[in-house]
Length: 321
Ligand SMILES: [Zn+2]
Ligand SMILES: [Zn+2]
Image (cartoon, rainbow, N blue to C red):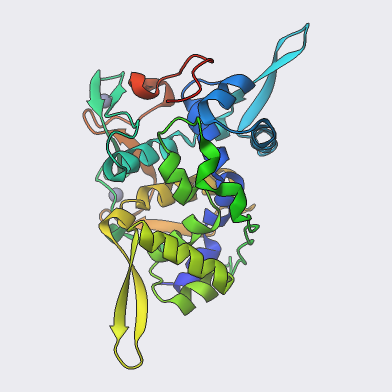
């Protein structure tokens, strides 16, 4: 078993977060999957300021997740459509819904169910191994760093000033995912969480594993503890020392981390392929995670899911939910 720091360095999680580790980007993707194409639709649904929306849409186009398509000649007008690379993040969107549905406050505008149009039933998205069709849990996975890849230095996420991701900025936003994006829509937070999934518990281990500044790490750990995703446990009396352990709520974010890594492996891996392989210990195969319907167990395609009216596409004039 390679060291946790080596696993983090080899994983695609940092690369994936450099593309979508931003709350507005996650909200725009949410809305694209709900059928939004045009600037004003994204603006109404996300509540983002024009300048913020412009920069995030441009970033999504540059990174190949959306394409900008002209739909009117005169006047020239454009809309944004998901590419294959963008569409393959649908599973990430679904597991965010699942987590928020389970752990978010009730009555927060989160749809109570999703409908799988293929089987016609209300469903929850499950994370399933493509090899053995069993549910995937954190305890059933292990990691192999690909021989010869050596230690690949993780590219550092750029530090985003917190003022750009404050909670007050989304007035008018659709409620669903807003709380989750407060946690995941930041490049460091999911990275700190990934360190926990890879088995790092102590401040110094996480700090050196991620090569993260201590003040940033302290802030992110405190936030994760405040959200009950990590708990701070004393493991030594003299001197008093603490470590950070995942709660059940925290472990339930593993599907998000796993799908993010898988997406990064597929679309952003260095030439020669991904440096980290995840093994499903249950069946012994390299893990391919599928998001499947809890009712009929079929893999879910973006066109096959209906969100009920509470967060279905809204008319342009509706600014608040
Ligand atoms: Zn399996
Ligand atoms: Zn189904």
